[in-house]
Image (tube, rainbow, N blue to C red; front, side, top):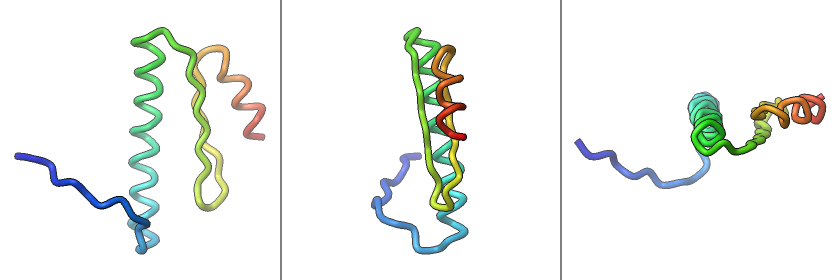
Length: 71
């Protein structure tokens, strides 16, 4: 079964937008972690939600810097 392409545009429904944000954020963090492990790369990622909440990921030495930045 083939996946259908979606048109990239703002999601009007607030609940659906929040669910999509959470799922895509988890996927993005998973990809950042995989990149770090597979390629032995230093990766830092900061995501700000629409409500102003900060989410961060940092591989090894960048983890501490991201925590300091997010406070």
